[in-house]
Image: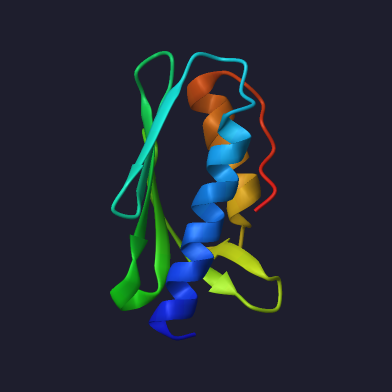
Length: 107
């Protein structure tokens, strides 16, 4: 995947996450700037998604740690580099733990 394709995939992913966050029932804020999506939960904890273009990864920082995701063209989605967990499932789990609300992400 070239850098342009990588950036398009990241942009589409971040936009899909933003759309889903608009539907959240909890009081949260989110902002996107320079390829970084910061989600601020009601309890003031944060989830931060950042693009890492030099290594073609999408990173997620939560209060439990930092996680790296590669784009898997066979699964047509982002998967955790350590164990192959899809980003959608992992993000839903982390969001629930931090925000206290169950949301599914179609990314």
